[in-house]
Length: 241
Ligand SMILES: C[S@@+](CC[C@H](N)C(=O)[O-])C[C@H]1O[C@@H](n2cnc3c(N)ncnc32)[C@H](O)[C@@H]1O
Image (cartoon, rainbow, N blue to C red):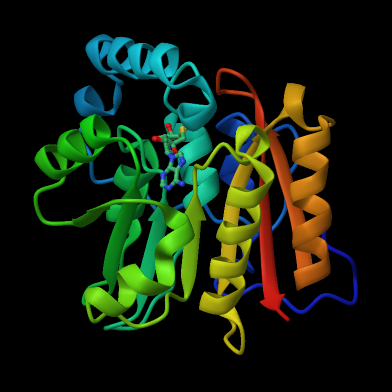
């Protein structure tokens, strides 16, 4: 939870009035008031997409790490407000079938850039078809430095992550965290992710939070977002050391 001494997070100073209505039991500093431009019919996740996601989970449980894509409530809580200037970049790790990508697209300021990094070729293909105007890289978030250099992109100001940290091997966790710190150090940018409530106390989840707390001066936990299967906390880190 935010402590009184923490500096206000960039772009997230507004209290989350709508969050409670959308499934948060408790929260702070998330502005979900920006309406989605997606028509109501398209907001329902197609059953086919959920089944496809589940199929990927069965094939690669530790990489996919979830049986269903995130709900739009969790996705909006994760993305919040982006508040990027023209040219600034938001990177999404592990977009999967794209629920948070859709939320990010809806609040991406004009002229700001987006890059999704997805390891699963099927998800990568689906993303490029579903979001033809957005950029996606097929590869690992652990290689963010090289990926940005190859694409001539700046260091991101925001990183959104759907990676299943709790089920990733420690060496991959370490490499991803190094990349996040490298990206955000010396900036007022932040990293946003989620952890499922039922897995919050697991050793790998605690290990991830302990490592992040060593490397970042600011942390807040939002939620749980209960309108998601399973319910999840959103975690936000800033002040990379
Ligand atoms: C829990 S799913 C989340 C998918 C989506 N963000 C959502 O919320 O529904 C995790 C995603 O991370 C991807 N992933 C796992 N390891 C990765 C890595 N090292 N780099 C990039 N993506 C990765 C998986 O393929 C999967 O799409």
